[in-house]
Length: 85
Image 1 (cartoon, one colour):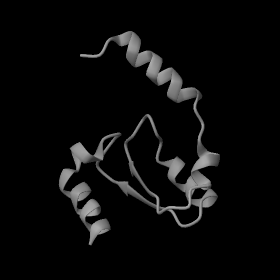
Image 2 (tube, helix red, strand yellow; image 1 turned 90 degrees about the horizontal axis):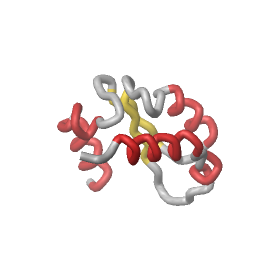
Image 3 (tube, helix red, strand yellow; image 1 turned 180 degrees about the vertical axis):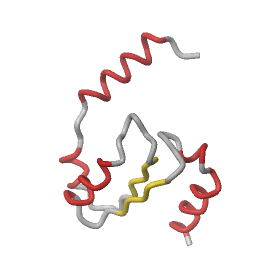
């Protein structure tokens, strides 16, 4: 198990990091996926980034928090497979 100190350092780092400008500068396809119940990355961020970025796709997993690949595994796998078809 990670130490509480390491987890808090990581959360503090994430709290101070803002890469929204750089995200808008990416030229490759970007798929941003969110969990509607996420307390770390609120779903309102999706709409803000939709307005600030061009050509990105976003999706909100309705029954997930921060880890939709765990809580909505089959839906997550479906989205990944749809990208490679």
